[in-house]
Amino acid sequence: AQKVTQAQTEISVVEKEDVTLDCVYETRDTTYYLFWYKQPPSGELVFLIRRNSFDEQNEISGRYSWNFQKSTSSFNFTITASQVVDSAVYFCALSGSNTGNQFYFGTGTSLTVIP
Amino acid sequence: DAGVIQSPRHEVTEMGQEVTLRCKPISGHDYLFWYRQTMMRGLELLIYFNNNVPIDDSGMPEDRFSAKMPNASFSTLKIQPSEPRDSAVYFCASSFSQGALNTEAFFGQGTRLTVV
Image (tube, each protein chain N blue to C red):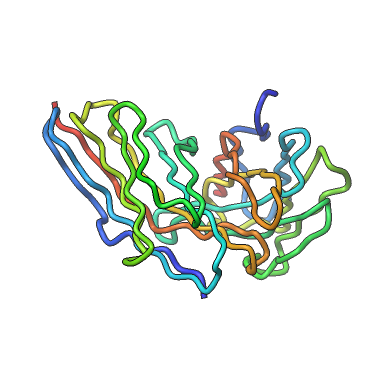
């Protein structure tokens, strides 16, 4: 079965602190994608990153970085030097080759950055 | 491309009325998804299509919900009759398949439905 777990329901940090959002997944697929989405208070769902199951290299984009570890089935997201604009709900998602190509979303982590 | 376009953005209707939500996916995308988001249940997949064909509608709450995709550029989600518990934000998303996998889904702005 496909499952994505985001154990952190809510996180609060003070501006400029680093914060890591955890994502653990379960899949029987050998080929799959992992994703992170951001939902700011305005409500839209914004795609942030896609990672292929064959590519375990970490990725950095500005203040954002992602750590993918197949050994622990985790795809964690770190925001460095957080800013108030980072306040949002963040969703991790999974899509596999043998499950009809649908997306399985976690329950989201609500991040509040306090100025 | 303008992205996934949903209409209306907001809908307020009385219980028992029919509600139709509309979605225009990104051109060239072969998958279309309808999601519902509430505080209590989070983001739920209702139904999705591949090349205009419904693949999985097991998330549709009950017979009051129906979805169609008459062509590659248009889909509707209909609720008839609507009930207050249907109040939620409904998202449409589209993606395209790349080999055996889907690339990322792009979401519309959502339709905030309030049934009074």
